[in-house]
Image (tube, rainbow, N blue to C red; front, side):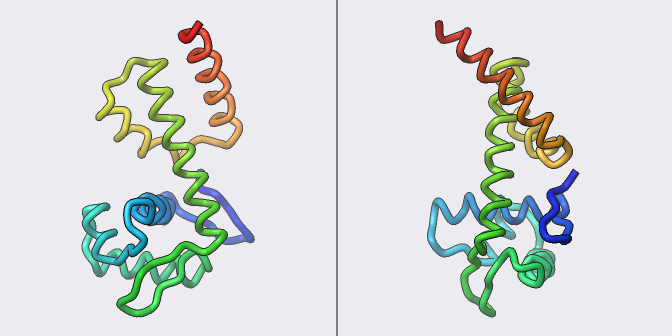
Length: 135
């Protein structure tokens, strides 16, 4: 299930682009199409098509051959996806004892398909579990 904002559907694939820009921006202020292509292991023409879609939907600002910047709405979605990812990875590792590399990959796969309600319930369960472990 993808997030909907102002009537525009953000696909799981486009959420991945927003999340990748968000993480790359944390490492370096300049995020370029080439950086995304390398990070996501996708061709530059494919990245350009996705960026054009994100730009037309108002989630990314991009000058031709320039750096990528998330708009306020793009940043909101990216932060949400990053939070989901982090929580799911932690849940898989701490509650289910999944190997860290597997948890990373699987968190990427499932973060787009769970409702906000399910995510919240998993977070509450994780918080209780971690609280019990730390006592």
